[in-house]
Amino acid sequence: MFRTAELGQKISKSEYAEREPVLRQELLDVQRRLREVSRFPVLILFAGVDGAGKGDTVNLLNEWMDTRWLMTRAYDMPSDEERERPEYWRYWRDLPPRGRIGLFLSSWYSRPLLDRVYEKIDEATLDARLDRILSLEKALADDGALILKFWMHLSRDAQKRRLKKLEKDPLKSWRVTQQDWEHWRIYDHFEAAAERIIMRTSTGTAPWSIVEGEDQHYRSLTVGTIIRDEITKRLDALSLEPAPMQGSEPVAPDADGETAPVESDLVSLKSATVLSMLDMSLHLGKSEYKKKLKQYQAELNLLHRKALAEKLSAILVFEGPDAGGKGGAIRRITAALDARHYQVIQIAAPTDEESAHHYLWRFWRHLSRAGRITIFDRSWYGRVLVERVEGFASDDEWRRAYAEINDFEEQLTDHGIVLLKYWMHITKDEQLERFKAREQVPHKRWKLTDEDWRNREKWEAYEYAAHDMVEHTSTHAAPWVLVEANNKPYARIKVLKTFCNSLEQALEARKK
Image (cartoon, rainbow, N blue to C red; front, side):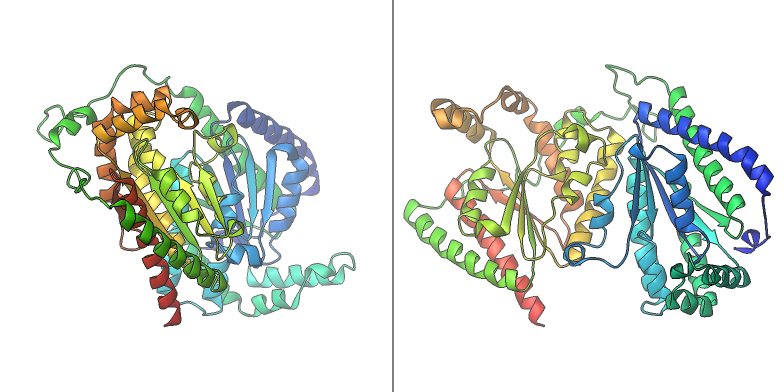
């Protein structure tokens, strides 16, 4: 695989001096176009052999391009703050917004490579970790990101020459460490692991470019040219795209050539949903409610203090119809907790900054440190609920979101986080009564908006979307808790009880 990058290719100083200023101007021009269009971000990853010029190339790009629209991130061993969150948290946090370029050194490929080289993981485990990388890159590419990956290569002999040359330079000798020489001694292990990584993860949407790194002139012009060409190609393709059709809904023929029903038709075809089968008459009396509320709040307080000591985090997600009781259930949870150790995230329409990123970005950035509780009042499920029903997301976007969400949640639970997802369900008649009641109470009237009334007109569409959501994302590790919420006391106790049970089970599992 690497033979083509061991040919000793070089570019003379005179040729470099002639081509370099032209390429610099072209990169600035393409960067300006990218910023003006602001339709997609560019992620450029650098990996490869020690001494092959990864850092030098990143520094050169920062010299050549406008650094106001360039983000550079390099990663070392995770900090305490990073270790307390899922592995990819620090990468999601650093993703560039649309219209900007991110340069990444030692990113998500570094740890799997080193772990395989040092035989901390076997090939099957490496492949599993590469599958997660593929899922990440697919999610970003599907959202429009342009991903370019450069493997900077040196032959074993060229690497030795490079390290010795650096050691002899008193101003650069600091760059050569004992670890560099250790890596050179096990060069064959690195090459084998790298070959498998590149072979498994070079895809049509996130390809690897293997660049010979011995000659800095050749290396620099090669990387710069690829970046210029790939961004230009994407920008040119966008300029040729026809304007989206307004006011039309494409209808696909089925296997027999018949016209397949559009989603509104499918809603009427479904006679029952997972929500329509709930027993909405479940009820809890006032005295029993007060008793159980004190019981479970006391239990939750004790369990969370233990979880804090064990650095066991929890994430609670609340979804459901307007006036379904999400806020009331959340307040019964937070009343039992120390305010220093939880945060409630209210999710509304994304800000301009959030809209410039992948839709999951704004949720990753809110993940708390170990032992804390994060509560989302509405969440990433908006992509398959309101964005689906209201047409803010295309069919392709919300359909692929199921897999993206499952992967995201799997990363949370694999990290040991307790994840609970509550659907607070009420009937359409109950919602109407609560809306009318809110109109009569001054301090609750603000909760009722014109949008709430409009959403009632699409009740069936939302219920169908929720049914699909449960079908596709209620997993063993992150199941949906469907809460019969017509009776507020019953719903609040069910929420508290299930949270307590989940924390208790997770704490017990840590003892084993």
